[in-house]
Picture 1 (spheres, rainbow, N blue to C red):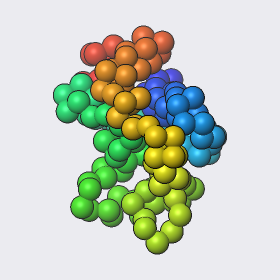
Picture 2 (picture 1 turned 45 degrees about the vertical axis):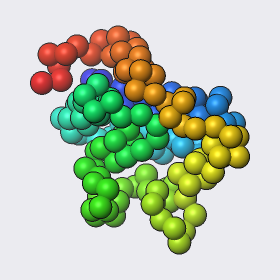
Picture 3 (picture 1 turned 45 degrees about the horizontal axis):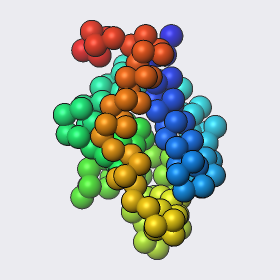
Picture 4 (picture 1 turned 90 degrees about the vertical axis):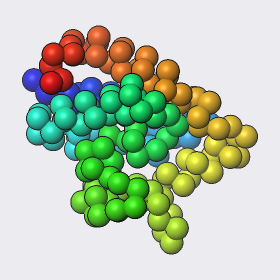
Length: 150
């Protein structure tokens, strides 16, 4: 059973639904069936490690908003802000466009512009407390316990 893969996919799915509710962007702009399929195909150990790091970013680093520390794919590929080599192997980036690209259109920029057009701030809707609740709900739903993470 790939419980952590499902947790990561559910995390992204719920964020896509929330984006649709908040700024009325299509869920597929953020997360598609191909994205879900990719996550479900990941090695279980790497998925568990990714979930643990994502959770750490929320609970210890208090990450919020929409950023690489909260992107399943960025965490999986070990993205570092000034070292974009992780982006080259990212199929999410191939499907949605590379997030930081200024020369090519990408879905991240479209989403951030939509927040601006709506006069909203992503930090208001994607707080660290929102992510803590979301992670707790997912872990309860999928029966993920703390000892499974270490």
